[in-house]
Amino acid sequence: MNLSIRQLATFREVMRCGSISEAARTLGRTQPAISSTISGLETELELKLFVREQGRLVPTPEAEFFLEEADAILKRLEISKRTLRGLANREHGQLRIAGIPEIADDFLPAVLSSFIKDKASVKISLASRSSSEIEELIAAQHFDIGIAETPRSRNSYDQTDFDLECMCALSATDPLASKEVITPSDLDGYPLALLHAEHRSHRQTIARFRDAGVEFNQRFEIQTALPGLKFVEAGLCALICDMITAYETQEKSRLGFGPPMIVFRPFRPRILNGLSILTPTHRPISIVAKDFCAHLGNAISNVRSAMIKTDP
Image 1 (tube, rainbow, N blue to C red):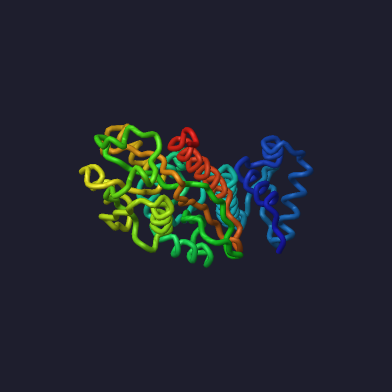
Image 2 (cartoon, one colour):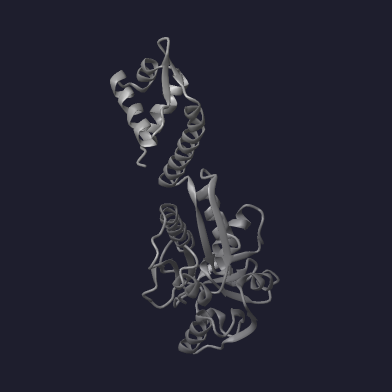
């Protein structure tokens, strides 16, 4: 059996109108074309769908039954068309995203909120993972998008890299807060909070102090930057932290939701802490995921512009 959508739609309209002529008028086709379509449908079905009684077109019992089937098919087709149109218009879809904790807790939800505010049918799955875990999850094609510290290149994922760097967080009452840029010499012997020893920023910080020939005094070792901000706010130390955390904390403070007594300054020589958007290589990325990657990339670039207004 080789039924066409046109045959089903024509049949439904004839049933609705009760005549060939009226169906032809509403469909914008000729009466012979409508009659030919119905005749072809009857041939395919091997059923008589209409009979004429006293000049009137009367549906057979089989036609009444077939109308339910045809109507269900056409309605399902219309739903599918709307769904596909929504996908093309970025109104439908699903985003499975994994991000490092520094951005998954605040920054990423804010960026997602601005992206999906006019996309009520886009579903979101958001996970917080370490950079190494995100690399493996994306390489295994388990997530649509990963946001991690810039990894080594691999054939199993594509990456877009962003040149970010660490900032120095200080108590607003600290005399160093008046400086536009912080250097190792400024922090000679000064109590510091750093991420754990395996983190790339930790190793770079030690190297910057060693190269400057000044005393490196680590008082706190932390797993993420947020606890360190509490120590900074209490005036116990300075914190070398990622730029996203610095930006989010600064924005919260500006809006009255964050610690008002912390300032962030560029650190020189730079301590690099690049960020990358990762997508699976071996699975096509959806339209909505591709658009979100661009949206997220703009947001990350805006963070750097906001935090490094000049390049000392």
